[in-house]
Image (cartoon, rainbow, N blue to C red; front, side, top):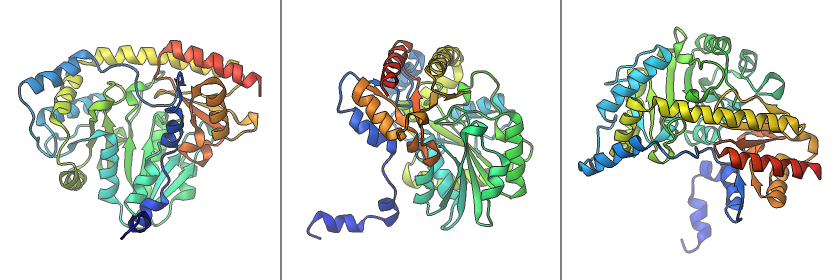
Length: 391
């Protein structure tokens, strides 16, 4: 082993074959420029509310610098259990059915690794968050992407599912409200998908990190459908609605057998989530409802502005029911989404994410995050309008 080539050849074939995140590649370019208005990153521009930060500070001052239970602080798991029951009507036992994780990303990784054996197929819908496909491959499963379409509002349908299910299908992965489209499902949509999962005896992973940020209607979780609690791993976290990305706090709720399986991986890899972040999350669940209401109202103003701005420019935009993304159709300009994003960045210093970062059916679209100030969004829209006038 005397050169970098020999090291390169020793890296796992699976890791070799998975490309880098399209978002990160693009923002490596963005980071090399100055004065860019970024509509790219899915991170709240709000600072975590003070009382939540103070809870972490006070825990540090008390000398809480130890490990916690692998499952997480019981006080936090009790708070999570109460929160989920209030939101969905479904109760999970904090002692055996709630696991505190390092962000939803870790929870999803644990869920996939606990369930998937080599060759098992996992259904998921695209466009999707960039991690889903790689996490399935890291677990040696086979990702089966279902391409949703603009024509049906990028909603997953039972018809699409039936076309892609096979005898090897074991898991269905859902994410609504969706990143990158912002689309949410109706109660009827959710019930239809649940009936499919039950009929085909699938385990469902449901990533509902954006459920608090649903603007015009009530979010309806698939765990609320009779018969689904028993076959679902519910994934959630504090990064988005509570503006706590840096705390890396997530959780899973699932029947004891599934929670124990995930905990086993968690205890051998992560041990536990950071105690200071857990204390902050306890406070977030205890008394941050008003903060969520305030931030949600601000996002809704931005959502309305950015959506109407694109429409006024003649750029059709998927109506974002939730999350904080606008998925704009730029296909009429005759460029790939990456070409459009790079040219926009080069000529107007506005950064957005090419739709293909989220799957091949994202071609012809760009994702614009409105988790940035309304002032910056307004300036970005002026620049985008100026940009397309010259095309």
